[in-house]
Length: 298
Ligand SMILES: Cc1ncc(COP(=O)(O)O)c(C=O)c1O
Image (cartoon, rainbow, N blue to C red; front, side, top):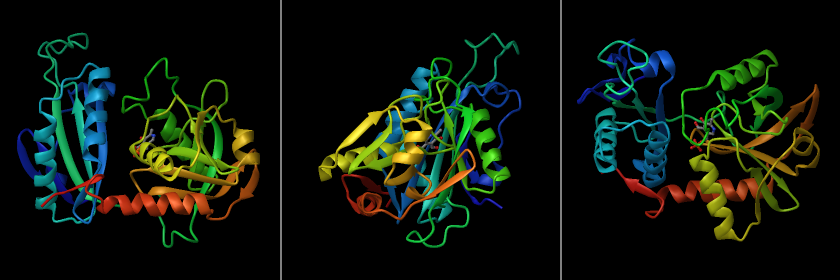
């Protein structure tokens, strides 16, 4: 059972008691945005980047969040204190709401709704035990991610049909997860994470067509600080499979997670927990106690 604290309709409550109407367009039309930040040792990681992305996503989807960034930060801290968690996710969302007329075309009368919940933190791998030995088993699927021209993936959204499909493909193939591609067959992202390859000391990641993850942004920023060359580029499945020295994924859930096995068209390729991935991951976790990168909730 998921435990934690929620904030909805101006009230705090146990997460299991928080409810949203079945008339809300967020529920019936995926007309919503959301963001997920995390807390380690009672410090919120990059609240500034998360709140900027949340408000930018809302603007892009023509939603108005009925709170300021400062108010949301305050609500986050209250939820965290009430939950008693030291390490947690902060899930915040804004849905279109309910039209006064009941008409699906009456977007103008909808009062956009904000809610939040806090739950225990966990990593990307469901059965993760040891970061040094347990990497991810990742399949390169041919599932096409919704084209960026249709739904802008930079605005964090509820359109997860393609990503859910990729996760079912992963389940069917008994691997941890599966990557999606664009209409030209180039790599985009996975269900809840961005993808990176390291080749000859250069850290490469897809340039567009995916959510610009906060962990992806952190990784690129750390590379800059460390003088590691990066390339935002097009990556084909064959390139990722054949040319990578190291492969890792980035996500709020688990940070920088190394890929142990890649699968393409029934073939498997295995990797070590490589030096670049390890270095970036170590620095990423150190940033969680750096006051320039994280904020205490106390
Ligand atoms: C589609 C998608 N891509 C990438 C990510 C990784 O983003 P972040 O590093 O902000 O968690 C997420 C996170 O949920 C996501 O939903």
